[in-house]
Amino acid sequence: MTTETLYRPVESNAAREIPIVTFRRVIPQCRPVMRADRSAMGTLPTRAFRYCEAVTTASAFGWYLFPPLEFTVQWDGTDVIWTYEGAEAWYPLTSAQFPGFAGYFDGLAPPEMQGFSPPFLSALPEPGVLQVWTGHIATTRPGWSLLVRPPANLPRSQCYELFEGIVETDRWFGPLFINVRLTRTEFPIRFGPEMPLVQVQPVPRSVYAEETLGKFGYVDDLAGLTPDDWERYRATVVKPNLDPHRRPGQYAVAARKRQSRGEGAPPEGDPGA
Image 1 (tube, rainbow, N blue to C red):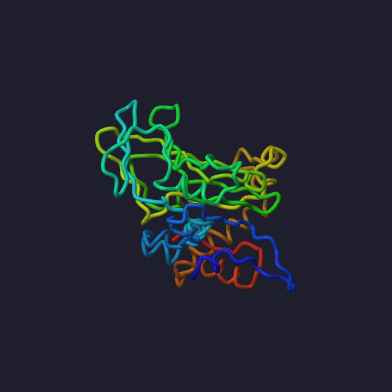
Image 2 (image 1 turned 90 degrees about the vertical axis):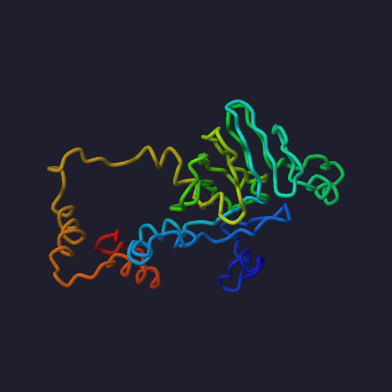
């Protein structure tokens, strides 16, 4: 699948619609954006991949972005040094450009914008916190934002943590960064382009608005469940477990059939394995 195919707007009624998200690769050496994978890059256990629709749906929600190149950092608890594939030494990290990118940017940017290429890697004022640029700019349809987060259900290094953030990318036309908190000081920490660093997920701004999140229901006791609640519990939990011929993954099968029909009603059955 080509990059053009990945980013091609969908057509509806013979008219092109604005894509939910458009990625612009700014550092040409970057690995292209990839649709997130139901198997979490092949790392999910087979039983989870086959039967647990909840996990595979979450894994596939969004797109992967990768480090633009292989680089390594070392943190001593105060300062950070870094190196990269092909470098001749380690360098103190304050704010660093992607190798060769500043000249490339200035060769294409309008004159008044030359000299304003985004940094690839920066050490933030907080100890051990870095900002890593994915090499992309992303924009979304009006009213939509991007949740920038660690890849869902992908095994993570214990040497660092990734901050999550929601960026109003319908208004912000700038580099798509993620912030990283280093957690180990005793050895170098490698970041490589073979596995995704970031997963981005489209979110309507109304979903996280205060008028939405401030309105929620709460039942504080089991006695508060209604007859309809109990009937739904019977269909979801009790009935499948009383069936001696029940096959695993009924929720997954029902969910996939519902998706193929374009239906919105939730299926019955166990969402897990």
